[in-house]
Length: 448
Image (cartoon, rainbow, N blue to C red; front, side):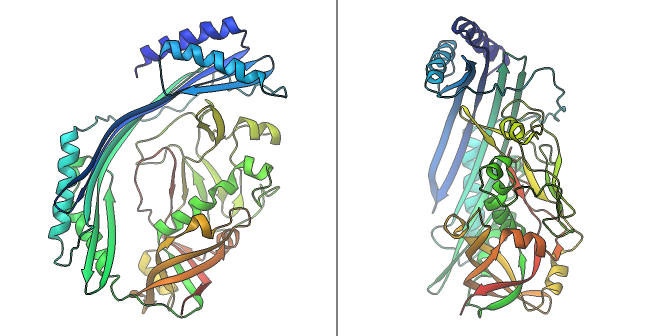
């Protein structure tokens, strides 16, 4: 969609809103296109090419908020949505304060990253190239091994009767290898991906990493139950933080769904921990200068040296707390929620090898699954099936599997003893969690 066309949509909506007597209204659109391909055995098993988009309106009329949305984006549909929103507003039983972002604000300039969608042929050929590299990487390669490639671009428009005229455009592409190895009656898998232009992706490099990850897991045993030093691989800490990140949302706190009520300004974690939310994370091409309500975004420390500096607010939760929005309003069709941008733990100074030396006799956790059932976001408790490697003589040793790591998220933040020096996940996204490795000196695990 071009800005010229969205101007046309907005003008039709503006005229309709005026005829309905709307006090304030906004028109929002999010859409894009995507391509993806994947393989099975020696051929393409799937290819997808699609376009999607959703147009939504939110309006204040008669002291009440009305919303409506549609997958169509035409001037006629924009006007129809205003009529539906006006009808929906009549069903609201209480008057609502108009929480719409004011115009005339200053927004950070986002670095423009040129992006051109690859052709369908390029995506298909890249997927097959990844597949061929995987099958050439080991004699133990088994059925289930696959390669894949993808590309997607997105666009967002937000215009309001308060003077906002905002838009954002971005895109990304990449490829992956999923290796399945078979040895006797045992099968192990490994995965690796890269987010970069398809012609720059090395299938051999991805395949070797994925295949090595599968091969080193053969012969895994069940460790003895007990308390161990634990090094969480960055990708696993990413899963933990992703599961519990909503505890930092002011709305969740106000609804009693987080234990961080009245904790702003207090120490809630080790002083080693600084947690940043950054819409302009270096290396991420999907940067955005405004949130789902049009509020300017900015880089902020959620936790700084262990102190909770701020919760994450949208206009509504900020109003309830007597605070300004932190620019973390999320658009969920026509409704408003809260989101993070690039929420990341600031890396420390330790290499993985140094963490292993500190965690002698412990476990390096490289896989966790079942957070949907094994984690209580309100209490912070979790009990997750895991896998990884024993740590012996300061090195990754024999593989272990099917053990349960139990703990509490809030206590984990307090008990971090060391933080790795790098973040490996550099994949693009408007909302991403990124973490280095971390060391916890003692955690209970249930094994043999």
